[in-house]
Image (cartoon, rainbow, N blue to C red):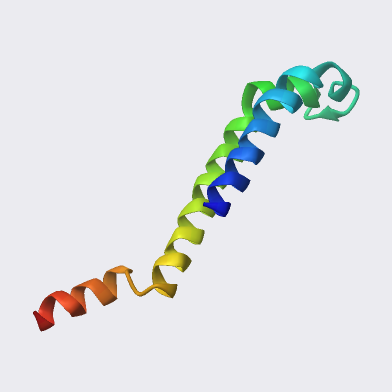
Length: 81
């Protein structure tokens, strides 16, 4: 549950405060010829969301291995039964 709370917190911070509330202030920083606020609102958030998806997959796989409910363990248990 803690993993989900962290990822949702990052999602909220990127989606609302950075891309909307502080967009004008972030526009003072230039990225690729555009203001950072504009860039985050238009495409930067999408990159962050994709990275978050891969982080979520990696963390869930690690958690599955910890509790032995990952694919190799489930296949081995199925063969034994």
